Amino acid sequence: MRQADLFDEQAAREAHKDGMGRVEDHAAPDWKDHALEAVRATARSGREFTVDDVWPNLAGGATHDLRAMGPVMKRAQRLRLIEPTGRFELARRISCHKCPRRVWRSLICDE
Image 1 (tube, rainbow, N blue to C red):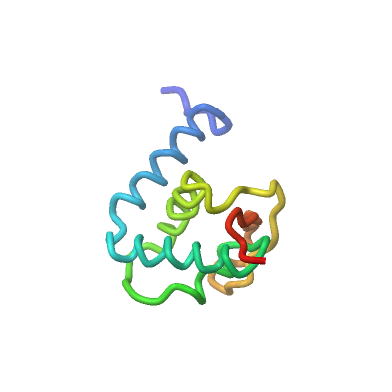
Image 2 (spheres, helix red, strand yellow; image 1 turned 90 degrees about the vertical axis):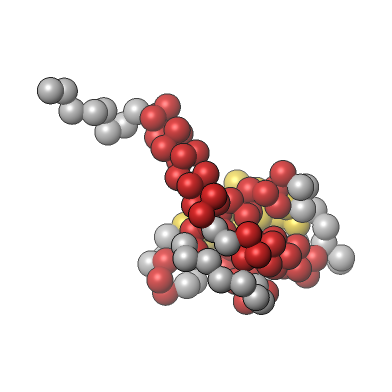
C-alpha cells in the first residue's frame, strides 16, 4: 500500500475547503451572525486588523469551535467589508500559540 503524498497541493486545498465548510456548517447560526457583526464593527473602527481584534467586539451567541471565525472572515470578504493585505502578524491570544494571523484591510472604515 502506497503512503499518501504529504505535500499534495491540490489535496491540501481540498482538505482546507472541506475543513472550512465543516466548521461553518456546525457553527451556531446566531453565533455566525454575531461574529459577522463583530467583524463589521472592527472594520468600521480601524483600517487594518487581525481576527484577534474582532474577538473583543463579539457580544452574544456561542459556538463549539472557535475556528468558525475563519469562514466568517471569508464571508465578510465576499460581502466587500474587508480584504486581505497579504501580510501576517503573530496571534496575541495565548491559546493560538503565536501562530500567524492574516492582516485584513477595512473597506468600510469610518475614518
